[in-house]
Length: 116
Ligand SMILES: [Fe+2]
Image (cartoon, rainbow, N blue to C red; front, side, top):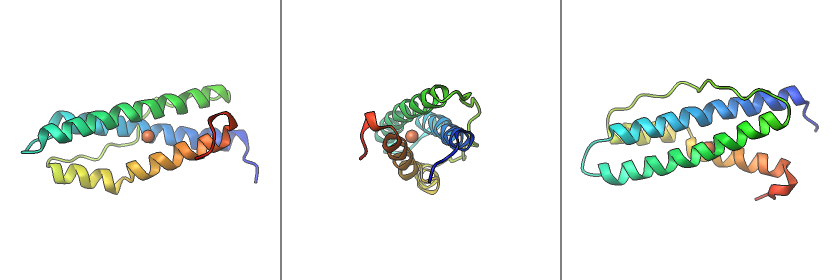
């Protein structure tokens, strides 16, 4: 089923807003994480933040390519104080799962990127 351009752009902008919030979430968690695994979690969150930035750039580029205006507004970022809460918020938000699904879907639409 074909998707019209406005629907595509709206969906891509929703995804972009999620990527922006993920960047903020991981960056915030990296800065505020405490406890005996602080170093490992900080490294993990920093790595994820960088990956999300790449996804956000890719989505923004695609939106611009299709003639849209990439959003500059992130989704709300869930607060968490303890390492356990941080990991729970990440899992609840489905950041890892959603992220892979979006990128795969977009890559499948763009033949030059291949379909995984
Ligand atoms: Fe992502």
